[in-house]
Length: 557
Image 1 (cartoon, rainbow, N blue to C red):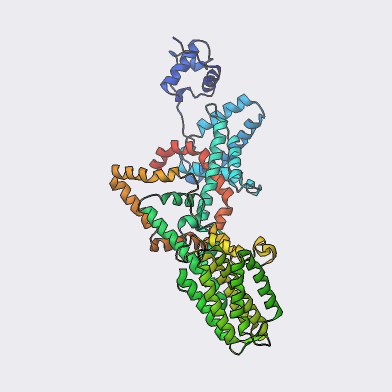
Image 2: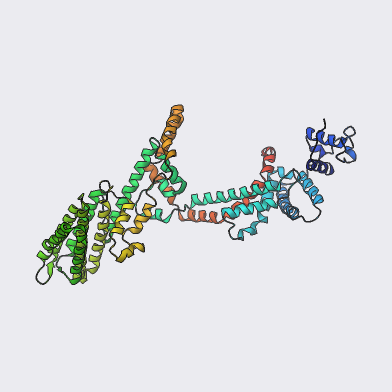
């Protein structure tokens, strides 16, 4: 029974006969053509009137025979220009389309030997890129969307043979453009990592971050989920604890930086060490200084006394007694006190504040905060009393103001041994903002507000989804370990090794540090994303030729 061919297939068969491509078809294809000739659906050339009187195939010659590699390369370049011209005419419907289609089909057959050579493919690729180099000036061409759209446009301008699809060419060109832009972006990120300014700042401050905290995004999400895995999760948790600890170290060192000191511990001991260094700086600065309890200082006491009344009569009475015993009982009738007396008052107020802030009673903790505020007001009074030491005392007062925020953060519910989180520091910064209507906080200028906010976006690492996938991970890994322990256990070990101290230092350095010339090279590669996209597009559109030519290319070598 004869096969009923579609009109489109018959048209392609007729074109095959007209341009002399019958003899290069497969036996089954020739049999189908012969059947349609017999049925009268196709008009054969004179030498194909019927199957019985078909003559031997016309011998095919290789047009590249005798050509040098340079000749083939230049021929490939020229072919790309001509192909774009033909593709443009075909796309826009210019001229006799039937004759143009035959011309394109014949050119594809004729150029096959050229496109089976390495030099021909290289030349054709070069010409394809050169043709569209001016598109690099188009705004947005260096983006992924731009590279994809440009690639699809080049695919549309690629001449389409009878057995090919313009739509497929556009998809291929778009995918190639996107991939080429991605390669440039990937190389650029390796050579010149785009580390977030907050991450760079924290690393410069000595904070040890994990790869997920450095890179963020999907890397951080995967790291979050990997915390559910045996062994690997423990190593990640330890590394993140180190991130928090080194963050505490960096903050404590910023507390005492204004008095040119450093702190070697963290937690309760570190906070105590910072306070001791500030106290020693005060002792040195207050020698020979007479402190005056001026009107501004007295106004601060009155304001704080009024505020303590909100905690109840008992708290308000305790505050007033402390002020009378610790301050007014030690001031001379002229309203002055020696530097040594001021230092004694400061020390005793500090002890009282720590005692109240350690209470389980909220009102008593508030009383502790009020006593700290009196300490700060007293320090400012010292600053006004000794204008000759203003710079030195301002540096000490700045250190103390920062210490107050840290002490508040470390005393919050949920802290562990005085180790505070960025969120707790941010809360303390806002709570101790003395400006009108918390104006400094509203404007982002409160002490430690910026450091806390930036770190808060990096150091916390919670699983963002419902947790189902994370909770299932241990079971999945447990089953995989049981099934293939020789594969899974080494992989788990490799994952855990990535979070050891030596690997952490290596990875942090490799992710953030590059010699300047390497960084500039990476940035240059990133700017050349359009060129890379053109390369990807042209390579994708010629991938079929390259695959077909692979045996010949291997023989060339």
